[in-house]
Length: 279
Image (tube, rainbow, N blue to C red; front, side, top):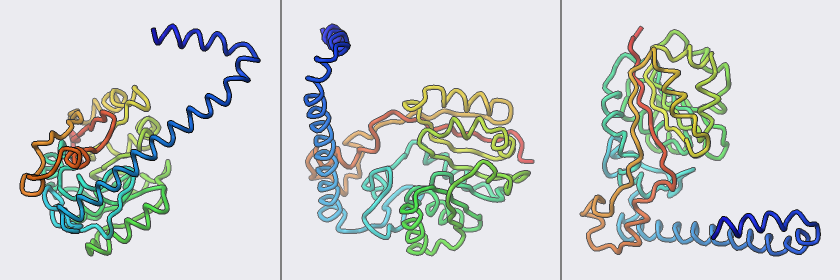
């Protein structure tokens, strides 16, 4: 039925008068959609603040996971929600791999591409204090926040930089690195860049893939790394309400619990690629 209505609408829109009459209704519909999104985001922010004040007691330190003890400079995050980060459940699907890779002392550098607020950049700097961490992001506001994050945790081994360019990896060629990548759909351009691929042959890689932006991404990266790496794909697994820390959420209503478990609305994946050769 919906398909028939849609096809009929498209047919009628071919006629100028119908199209002209429909413009105000389309504009109103877009306005309603925008307001609904804004309302949802505002509601979530209020509930996140409620969780911080009433259940986390304004504690901005990560309470569990590999980055336990890391402290946020303020109640703010970029491109993701902050509550799962504070309670230590954010992207917990890859925690075991992060902890395992962090024990490897053979890395010359840890390179974080798409650092955003600095969760992984600062977290890895604390988890791997003997390693040199270099992070990149194109967002000036995120860069400033990441610098505050670094200072808050005295992460002196973290070097924060701006845009990651096509030739950026030239500095890290012929070296064994741990590369952590989350670039919101730009993976296709990055992992089809011959210079980049040739630079990571002996490096381990953690990359979040965004197939909802380009459905070719995950398979393309697996193909690109098939001869040089041992690859594993980890799917996103939504956290269940009863998997939240009971000590915090024991007497919490389900609406607040849902906010605490909400990390994303799409099913991203991660590829953990361990180099076959360490150089």
